[in-house]
Length: 523
Image (tube, rainbow, N blue to C red; front, side):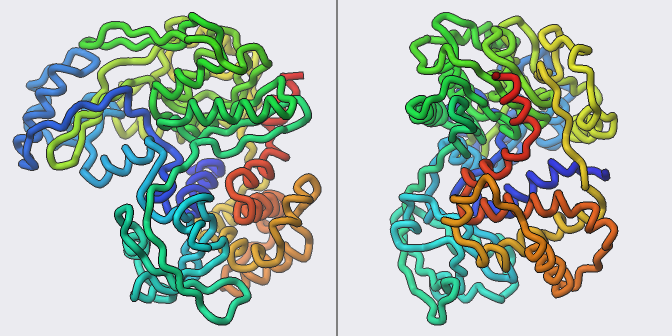
């Protein structure tokens, strides 16, 4: 299979295309931005002055000893890349977006949407948000935003998004066409504060085993996790599968707060240390509601930072079993230093260490470019797809390079070929679900038949006709070789469309080998 891997392609498309309303709902993958934000610097927007202030901040705060003279006269990005891969400069818009994403709330109307045939198609409406209260529904097509016609205009994505977003309290008028409707609807919506959970799914896999999927560690994740545990315990949960795959991190305080629900009192969860930062230990407070039950934590190559901290603590303290593939290896702590113009510097000030003193951070000695392609190197070297002897690695003895699982589960690439990747890159699977398949099935039917529903032969034939109508050159041998994986993707995307993230993961997990391994391990 060519790079990028099927999993990375699928994740990127599912969460970057299907959820392109990111300013409403936040980014799915976030780097850990440390545990504090400094007061804004008085430095002006003048570039030279800002570089000088950055040099001063590096000298006074950076995790390691640095020869400042070697950094003089470099542009900001190049300067920071000389330090490590996670110290970075954020322009004002990105600094604001990153902060709001981790806080878990946004100013907007609360919808997810997808650009289908040059029209904004509503794919999710946040319950309790302004759009939900105004009566916007999944499947609605947005024809006009205020007085500007957006349907069929081939506008840039940014132009469409920019016409909906706005400050809390300001109105926006949408003209919508509902599925099966003839006359457009006109709705006036007052933008507001939209609350978004970092828990993608929480449900019972079987009568005794609960499942919780966490997308990021935001400001409210520990509270949301506790609430999810409480609900699942009332349903009979005595075992838990905690899914941290593709969780890029977030607030350290959220990770340690969540750990308090899993560990007894006075356990060392993680410690941090740097040149200018004395060792700081983070100790569990106890009193959690799931300190005793059996636990399996799922990780993969996109599990990073705060999620690696939690996985490392579970492993070192023998609290549960770690299942999946080696995590990303992001063990550097960033502190954010805002500037007066709204931009910010995320500067590495310390390193994370697991309870046994293991560093999480993978090497970046080969430079920034090599670091950025390290996951591709893992795939090319067979680490992600090989059938490994799980006894060959002693996870607790590995220092650096992420968290190694106790039980390895290879990436499933069965049925993946060039034609399948072409369909993904052209968004054809998404287009077909939102343009054709979504209207064929009802939410109630899918929910009731979750355990038995599959894409039928007639559905797949409709898909082939859709490819022909879209003038896609079909490689029939590769199409049929990929039929199983295409059918499964269509199935889970259909559940995502009608039942949101929770439905998506319920459908996905039915055939997920890592989840199956977790259930076996918890017996």
